[in-house]
Length: 123
Image (cartoon, rainbow, N blue to C red):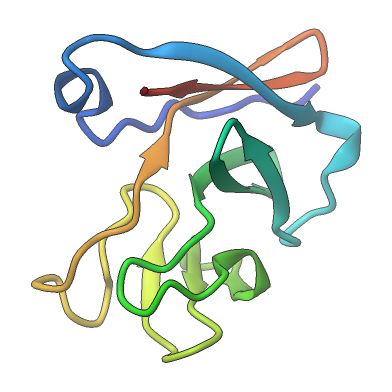
C-alpha cells in the first residue's frame, strides 16, 4: 500500500482558502523516480513517486519556463534538477536548493484515494 505525505506551500493561504481537489492520475500510472506530466485545466503538473512518497509540482521552471517533467530526480535528496539551467528544487517544499533567493516552484498537497492520486489545486 502506498502512502502520500502531505505537502503544502501555504496553498490555502495563497488561494484564499479556495482549494479544489483534482485527480491527477492513478498510482499505477507512476514509475519510481520518473516524472509524469499531467494537465489540469491550463496548468501542467509533474507528478513524481519516490518509493512510498508522491509529490506534485508545477511542471514549468520558474526561472526559464523549462519543462520540469524532463528534469533529473534525486531520490536521496528528494529534488528535481531543471533540464535547462541545472538548478535543483526540493520536491518537498519547492525551494531552489542552490540559491534560496531564487523563486521556488509551486508544490501541491497530495493524497491517495482508492489508487487515485489527488492534489489540492488552487484556482
